[in-house]
Length: 285
Ligand SMILES: [Zn+2]
Image (cartoon, rainbow, N blue to C red; front, side, top):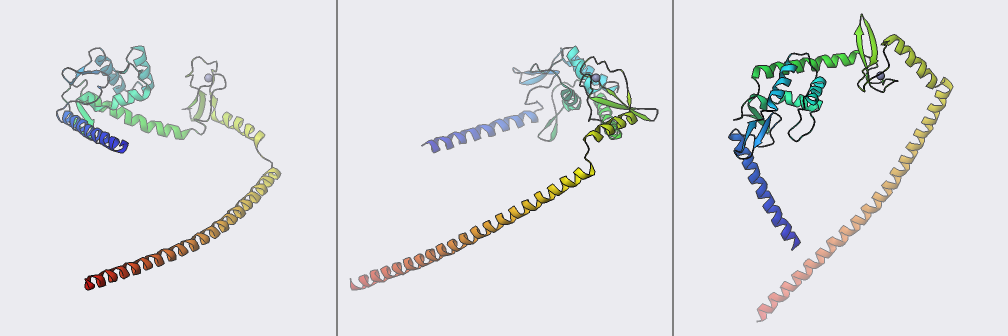
């Protein structure tokens, strides 16, 4: 009974899901975004459309304008949103990654991306395509610069500030690499830059404290060798046990097959005997 009940409810859920999907596709075809409106817009439940949010829209437009100048980072724009009380439609704070997805969302130029395809929306665009394109250019350029930047500094990403615990950043000045505190955790008493050569010295002296002498190294290597040998022996004995088990299973299987075949053979003979008997009975009748 339960099985029937479950399969029936699954059937209805499937139908429901199909209907919902069909409805969403229909909405998209009509140029109406079927989901939650992005920040700067609001869902209009009465007209079943998307309206411009007159309070947030100018701020969203401002983000695009600022980013297009190339003078603002995603980080500083996220801060700007916090300072100007711009938050997402569900009341959540706009984080750095949200800023990036806002700047990349073609919804703001009147288009919609749904299921990998682009549709023209009926909603009013917030910004021009030209402004959108210049934002994409800035972002693409930044991405590339960032990567080169990262590869240049040997110790970047490995260090934290001793005074405040914030990350350490690096920059190039007059042909030398310098490292300093990013001060992202607030005030920090560290005022100085550290040249990469000096940092290398510090790291080398630190590593010498924990490095192994050649004697110790030999001992460790020997221990590792014996461990490896032992592991190999263990594996071999395990393999032989498994092989034995496999052989016994195979013989059992062969026996079972024999029994099965002979039983079928007997059954068939009995059946044949029975039909013969029936036939002879018919003849007698
Ligand atoms: Zn610091």
